[in-house]
Image 1 (cartoon, rainbow, N blue to C red):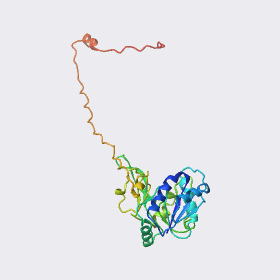
Image 2 (cartoon, rainbow, N blue to C red):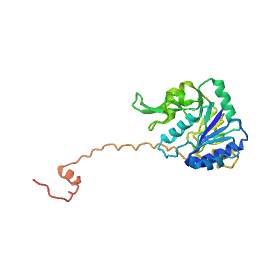
Image 3 (cartoon, helix red, strand yellow):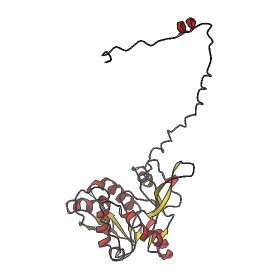
Image 4 (cartoon, helix red, strand yellow):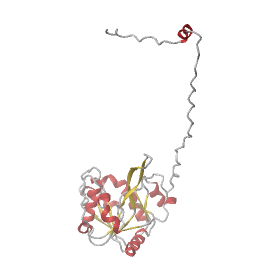
Length: 272
């Protein structure tokens, strides 16, 4: 199995940390294929020095808006990965163990499925019988940090080059039925408090926000995960409405004397 990495210029700080983690794991039988722009080819080669990595300067270098910022690099990677099955190691994905790629490949081959990865779900909003709006998990899709077959561009009938839909979601009907959902791939869900104690059986974690998890893999000291600051407010009971009272006057003059009349606001005289 090959490991495909896209090293965009904006992601180079994360790519440096990723290369440091891979280097700390020692030699691997899974070669790296690193995609970058021609401008940063020398710097990327320096980042992956000492690793079994092939540098392909084929990215366009054009700054794209989402979702093309992810769709275009993925389309280029899928076009070039034709030799064997491959894992897409994105910049927000952190390997957690030295044998992470071995375990992924073993489970992928044993599953007999076309893809292996972790599923997320498109939220669906609906209104129940009581008129309350609720949100539930809808259609599943596979996160892009997954194992793909060789020649994906010729196998798939969906083009990743969409300007309106992320390729993860666009290919959900094609990938979800023939994917092996593996606990080896974890989803950090952009939670900055994610630490090694939370990963469970995962050997690689995707959608990682921040650098703390990567530092923890390298054995560096990291601050503890921030505690939740949300405090549930106690519901205060509503103040009881004052009961209506009735006052009985002995005469009309007494009633007029107790009445309060608001002063008239100054302004233009009313036309008759």
